[in-house]
Length: 276
Image 1: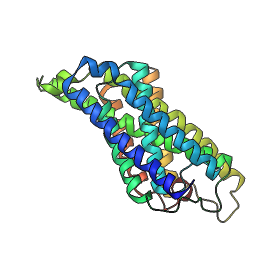
Image 2 (image 1 turned 30 degrees about the vertical axis):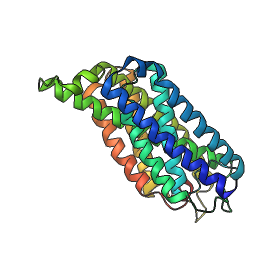
Image 3 (image 1 turned 45 degrees about the vertical axis):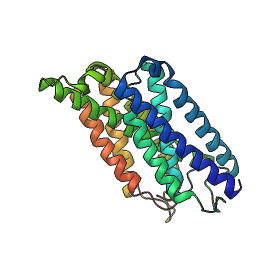
Image 4 (image 1 turned 90 degrees about the horizontal axis):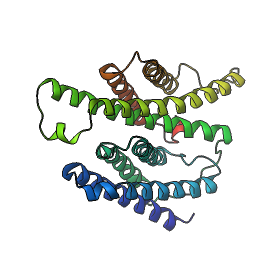
């Protein structure tokens, strides 16, 4: 991929995420039925275009296109948009999309600021198929944590408004507590499944290279945070499935997981997931 084409793709995606966020904000503030009917089209288009760009980049590099922390942030933005699209198609609730898409747009903007103008040539020593799958599942899992935490915060915010008897604009625009709880649980479940793949591949790789002095320790900070996220989402997903963990407890746990995920994203190494 030529530098000009690489920069153009990043710029187009950044503009699309900004327009998508603006569209979602208008839908949230106005509650227009016309916007509601058209709401899926911009999100679907953006996800498909971003997916196409990621596939082209992956074919070029021969691996999951997260070879730097900035590419990883763009990949997380894509995963968040894809998860939101999945939730909208599954639950039919689109009014809350702006709370997920706005952070995704910020991540894409940060990615663009540091990627535009850089040499897009892939570095040497790209990971193999297992490493690529591990990186993909890890970032998809982190994205699920972020989306779940956002819906957890919305749940607690609405719950607090109801308890205080405040039935203003926020209350009128939000779906019910039960619907927010389901969105929270579904996003947590998607994140948990992805992190199961991440942890499984990671443990297998560690077991085959445990004697290698360059092998990453299970006590390393990124590994510890990932295992913590996996455990927290496991409690959320399994507990919600058996009907013993939901509501405010589920929302609060996903917010804790969100804070841990943000810390992990902040401390990504220069080589992204593979270098963390």
